[in-house]
Length: 89
Image (cartoon, rainbow, N blue to C red; front, side, top):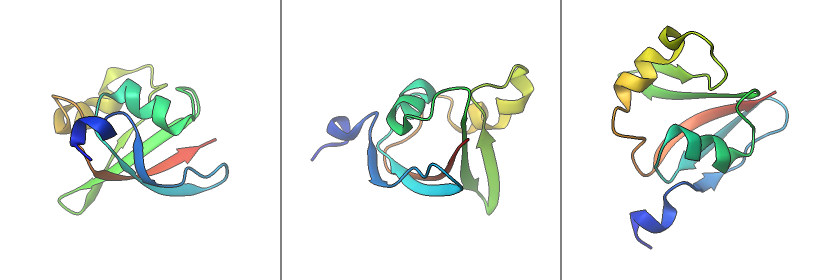
């Protein structure tokens, strides 16, 4: 299976309806991530670890600074096989 076949999909893990889920994302854009988790932009929150600390992404954020560190971490998109925590409310 090539990386392109996994793009925009969850490779492993389960998105929980309550609490946090640990998933592996096949890579792609932020919009593809939201679609893959089926959380919707208003209820999803994502976190990855970078250098031992959490970097979050809130699709519904109205202020760009909220996601500035995420955008700086993934300027060309999210790489294939990126592990992350997901919360759907």
